[in-house]
Image (cartoon, rainbow, N blue to C red; front, side, top):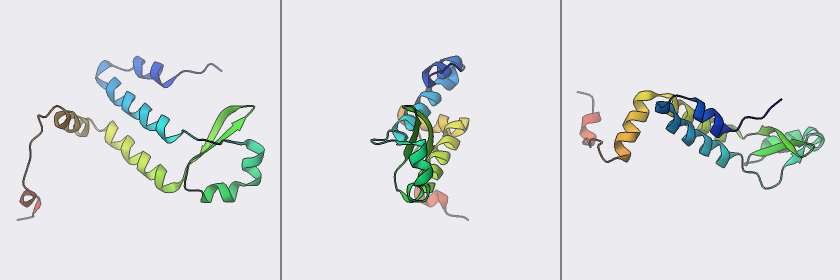
Length: 113
C-alpha cells in the first residue's frame, strides 16, 4: 500500500479548501509528536496504563507508526477543531478576523431581549 502524505491530499483539494487542510495537518502533526513510541506487543501488555496517560502514545510495528492511543480530552478537542475547520461560515469568520476585517460587537448584544 502506497503512503500518501497529508500535503499531497491537501493539494488534491479545491484551492478554497487547501488552507483549511493545511491548518488541520499542522494540528494533527503537532498532536501526534511522541517522544517515546511503544511497540504493538508492549502496547498490548500495558494497554490499561497507556489509556490512563495524559499524553498521546504512538504504537509502532517494525519501526512504523500503526496506531495512536489518544486521551479522551485531547480527542474531544481535536474533534471540535475539525468541526470548526469543516464549517465554511466559521472559517470565513476566522479568515475575516485574521485579516482585520472582522466586526466587534458589545457583549450586551448577546443578552436575550
